[in-house]
Image 1: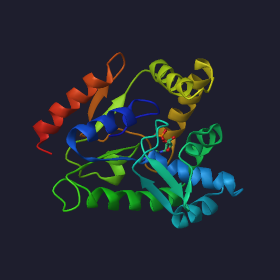
Image 2: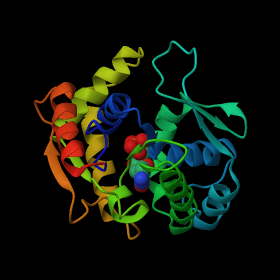
Image 3: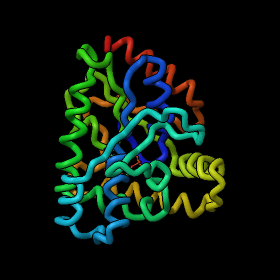
Image 4: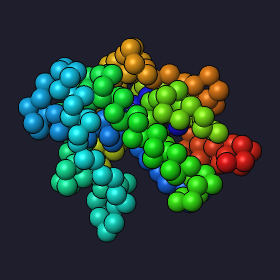
Length: 229
Ligand code: DC
């Protein structure tokens, strides 16, 4: 499942995975983890070689949320340290598009994501299936996926959703600010040279503007059953 920032990929992907008993994997977490580590270590986010070397060596672990009651979908450890909420900080939001545009960063993370996808794909010994979300899952990470969804929503609706998410965690950022940020990130993610945000040719588009998460999940479940995945 691919789509722009705040198009509902995590909410829908997680609900879908729970309904199907599949593993849920939000690949944006990995780009955020590399970005967080670059900022924490003083590596210039525009330094392609430095960011690439970091992505190759960083130990990123994504675990189930366990007993945490703070609304997290997973717990993210970077070199053993819990950075789950740091990955949503404004420093990470600001720099993650730049870090994720570097070819070496993408090569390192895409390879890991593909392995996780293949290990957990439907019919494998370990898991019954996987819902993987990001920007290039259908085009670069798992082009052979049996069902590809491209989720979208109007920029203002996406800004409203992100605003509500942040407000629920006590962060007061204006909708106008979030809207501008989302437009900037969309432009950056869609225009980068390597694996830009783009629907796969065989992806099914769903515009979630005005739709409830339940309605979107129900629609995708119908597609999953029809695809026999
Ligand atoms: O989905 P998100 O907002 O957590 O993603 C953060 C950034 O990571 C996003 O701006 C683009 C990048 N990303 C990517 O380039 N490829 C992916 N498969 C997932 C995320």
